Amino acid sequence: MTIALIGGTGLEALDGESVPVLDSAQTPYGRASAIPRRSEALSGALFLNRHADDHSLLPHEINYRANLWLLNELGVDVVLAVFAVGGISRGLVNGDFVLPAQIIDYTWGREHTFADATRLLHADFTEPFDRDLYDTLVHAALLADVDLFPEGVYGCTQGPRLETAAEIDRMERDGCTVVGMTGMPEAVLARELGLPYAGVCLVVNPAAGRGPGMIEVAGMRAVVDEASPRLLRLVARFVELVEQRE
Image 1 (cartoon, rainbow, N blue to C red):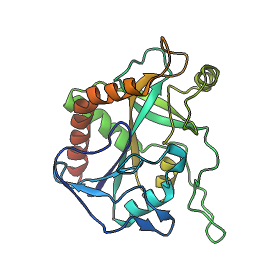
Image 2 (spheres, rainbow, N blue to C red; image 1 turned 45 degrees about the horizontal axis):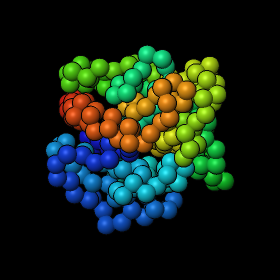
Image 3 (cartoon, rainbow, N blue to C red; image 1 turned 45 degrees about the vertical axis):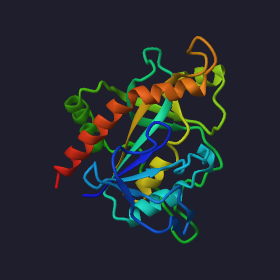
């Protein structure tokens, strides 16, 4: 069983030693964000930073097709994605973990499918996150003593700017509980490739109009640093449980 972890602002690297598994990140769809690395601490799980190893790629600049194609070519069986998000639901606070069950896509102009003139793809996307993996994350959270808010709705915006307060109000009316910039088209590309895909969201700030003042990047970083030990415990338990399926 090969597990891939896709990280970003909330998970930029894994603890312990890791080694690159390829010499190049080039694919038929262009260059992937980074060369995946195999983690010795997490039973050989692969890790890919969607923003590149130097965090130079903005959300709309990420080559999502290359990233997912590369993981699929490496024989990945399961993908767990970590997202840093803003909290829309009033009960969420910085450092909370949310398990997304649904996505609403507000992005535009991104390369969002592997379909082309020679191959028509109509992927069923009724449930964008794999339910078995979702349940595994719930179990992993119990074992890791990490609280999760279930059944989240991830609103994916274009970025890189943050949203207006009115946009967040609209997203709340639409049913979104958190807002991020990288969930799409990553999730649907995994579905087109037949890769079971699940996500966990780390709330790093109140969404626009939900907090006491302006949203500061330094504040987000402090939340990530504080939450990292809990996140790594959750990921480690998830990897253990998935491996036990073999």
